[in-house]
Image (cartoon, rainbow, N blue to C red; front, side, top):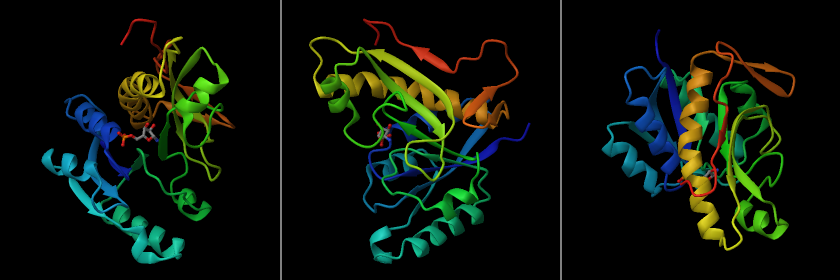
Length: 219
Ligand code: GRF
């Protein structure tokens, strides 16, 4: 089976990108990280990717001023030039227009640090603590024009502890993200994910691991 060529789009430290690169180093992984693109020139993840021998590109949105369309055309050009099959957003802090999203129907994934549809947007861990939820986590979903929406591919849940700080909760969720994103990308790259309206159905195995439940005390 030929491996899917994946571009990871980042804006910052790129720890989820690093988790995808690690996973794709396994010989039996169905995807290869062919390109990392950042919209922020000094994003920490660019150096991590380069060290891992991955091609990188920077498309600095600030050089396009308010012209979001021109920024996205440049982004699309680099993806096409690199013969990309699948796009993974990993801490990519730009809202994407319906035009760009429309170039990647069910071929662009995002990871969000909450159990969607709860806590869309930013500051998810602070808001989860404020809301008093007992379960929190992360979601990988296909990207649709509406932010932090789209069919859910996989989710991972962690407990919220009574003495949690925002930082402690964020670290627990991030550890789950690093397991969840490679798992979700594997399912998509293997062609096992079918989108049926707002739901993803996973074929090929009677009991696919699309749910990670991380019990108290771990990690
Ligand atoms: C992660 O928490 C991800 O869920 C969110 O942005 C953060 C990016 O972190 N979308 P990193 O750059 O992958 O370390």
